[in-house]
Image (tube, rainbow, N blue to C red; front, top):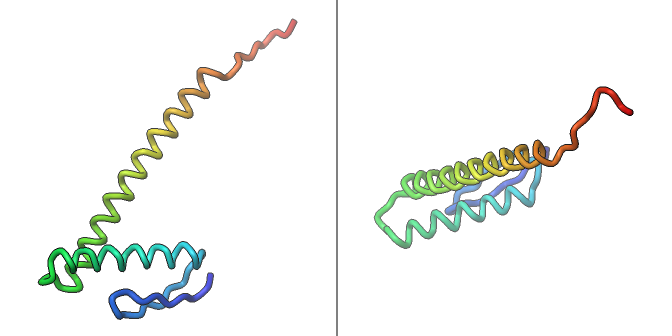
Length: 91
């Protein structure tokens, strides 16, 4: 783990991260979302922009998890169809 400082909406956050590149991309995504909410609704507080961004990202994560589970189920189904049968008595 390494220490990384990210800046979002002018605030600096020290983070311990596994993958610096991924965390920087995530921080950029959060900042972009927060800015887009601020542009759409300038009266929103920083906290409201953060909460809306968190909800958006949580929804997106749930959709990805759901799709992943569907794909895993389909892979298991396909594996069960294509697996060759084994015989106890080999001839």
